[in-house]
Length: 331
Image (tube, rainbow, N blue to C red; front, top):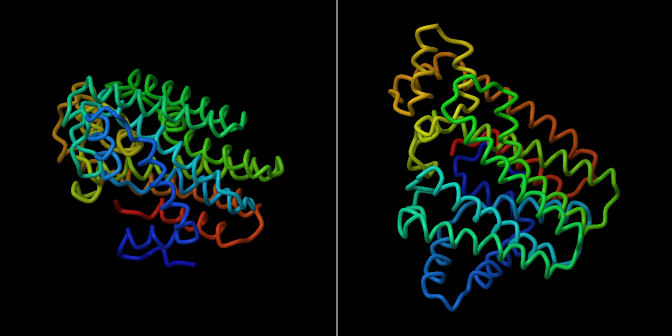
């Protein structure tokens, strides 16, 4: 298996996804085809979306799980594109809500074309993904994706309710990330299980794995808001704090610092206007990042235990390495 300590993250991701390289290329081609429109602005934004890159984590997860479950067809490629379009729709709407100007190191659609266009294009992507899942003709696939879309909306509202509230605890934090991130990972696993027609035991295993992977992925994302390099992670550092989000690093910092520092953090959460450099140093000095890493590693062990219930294969190996990569990545 590939050494996860590789210094080149892009090379590592390519190695992780090597067993499904042809599938990934097919997903990109399907996405380009599905984004085609006779509306010029739609074509322009479609190209922007495709060229914005991203790791294509959700379609890759779906396809690796399909192969790990013994699936030998090609429908998983189409479903990979479907889940990626749904994910992209949520990102476009999130960027409008959060007033984000940068994603993946490039200007967001709302920054380039305005909120109105971004919302409507997000709607286009949502509805296109639903058209695609209907064409797939599998009721279990439809149920999985429809449930995920509904849960994602709930997660966004929960996050808005939690914003600027320093009393948010770990339970409320996980309620948000399980709805905003992990649920779509789980949907990919459920879709894969549906077309692979696997046993209930194997489906339960891949769903558990996907939920753990999704939680770990978001915990590390939240850590990188305080430890990453802006040009590497593709967004402005401190964005979460400016939006009043109480993520796990901030939550742990509040619990393990002085009253004076806690008051400083609380004021910043309420206003979205604190001294990010000062608060970032409090987060680091309070060992909050180390605690987050430990919490992410708990998810890693949970996902590993579930995954090892599947039969050995190169695809299971890649899924296992994906867990380690998710927890260890620095961008």
